[in-house]
Image 1 (spheres, rainbow, N blue to C red):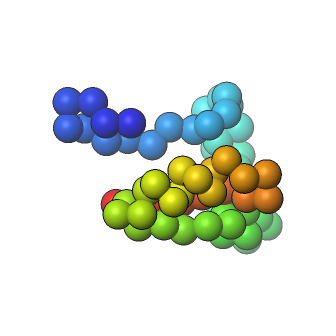
Image 2 (cartoon, rainbow, N blue to C red):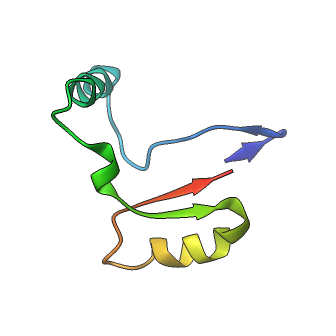
Length: 66
């Protein structure tokens, strides 16, 4: 989202701070590879294509890099 020229990332699901801390610990220990959940990467200049991909059932997580 962009509001007053500020950007931030927001989760697409509900979670608690404790759950996020536990997830980070699992990643730090190497028990979970977060890159394996990302199915697509796009530059910001290709955001229209990224949005199209988000609507496909075969996608997993889509990353848009600024």
